[in-house]
Length: 320
Image (cartoon, rainbow, N blue to C red; front, side, top):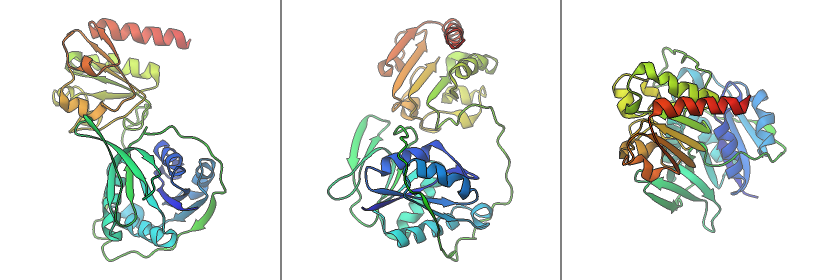
């Protein structure tokens, strides 16, 4: 059976959820072959095998950490040459999309980014994308070379399908450009204990209606009761009420959670572009004419300062 390369997104061997989603999607196209670059492959391999990887190609080198994406592109190119896959799948993170673009150029292949679904076709993988601020859905396929496809997090539910997961060392050579840009320092992001915004199954976002940084505690309390990530609209971020790293929208991050709760967000097109593919959308706004209600599956017309604490209390009561 044809093989599909899956780039493993991990933190020192702790496999992130989008990779498990990729393995699930890859099984529609062929036999998944995971490519684990960096440390921790011994810890990652059993997890990758549990979710369908028939093989796990591993490589580690200090250049992966000391330099930007070029060394990883060299390794993935070697994996493509060794496996001759029907496709290469990566998560739609900022780094992985740069790797995907460079790999497509190196291999003379077509590139599809931000797919939300994959299916096997007679002439190769068919990708579904949500485009133009999620106003249209398109299907497309690569017509030249090995398809390189990045997939948005939460596009599929991870499904276990135990496979051999045979670990093999990947041999590769660094090219002359691999060490062109060196990482000179790193600063650890302060942990909030909440899930990553782009990977979270539930996101609670606040907007202009929150009316101040001091009131974002209401949004955080609801998020914590649900085990959710916290997002913010551009208006809230521009006002300095919440960090820019939490902005959801066309100029921020794109999310596709199972549940998206928008509190005090009017629903401008810029914001809708970043969350419109959410599976279920709940809006809380005191303006019954707010555009967000056109998009919402469930809407509550009311003051968020009354509705959000009541919802938080109800969630906590049911949990206890």
